[in-house]
Image (cartoon, one colour):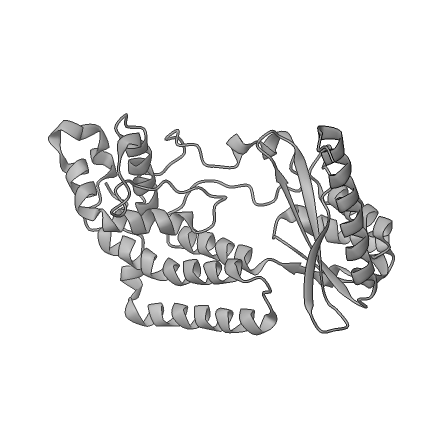
Length: 322
């Protein structure tokens, strides 16, 4: 048999249809299903929403399968997401098996749940929307950093709709332009130093094989990136101090950390458990409540331990009178 482009295309189509019918047959035998939804934009600026179904088969085997990945057109609003989800579930005749949805904590997902409750007419309730635990932990880390007095960048937390233009990859990261950064804070100083170093012509030639030899720049949309940046900077403390203290590099003297290194160590010690549990959750194929509850308890215990180690003065933001 010749395998030309048409034959390969037809074979792939038939395999897809056969596999879809097989998955649908399995899902139809499951009484209750939960779903996860996640939207993103590809590098070629095509937006998609992945819909995954989760359940337990009559043979007591846990199952998770991708049931749809419709293209997202227009605004990335909760109403639009809900319509796509309802369309997919109705097409597969799975709407009546719905018990919960797991999504991240974007405000658009709250409106998704409200519109879904309206569209499904009693099958789904607003309380059946579950948040992503790893995302909650990441948001908690950002809130703690702000309370600690280190992150003063203004972020719009109340945006209801995200347009396709705003999903551009260039808008998903913090651009190192040096604007709106308060240099009187520890994180901002390290952020500024990392920006300066990464902009150096010599930076691409660095060898990372023997350990961290280049500062890491934090990205707000990347989980644990602030921890990675602080931890790397702490390991390169002597190099950073030498760089900022050199007379030939007076332009980076404003990023110098003197007494603030203890504060960096404090923040690293606090953020490290959050980093560890996030990796545990992301590596788990089937995250369950039996896993989540001990993680929450361990994090709360860690917070109380930190409170006993540092007094109030030690937890107040560092030098702000430069």
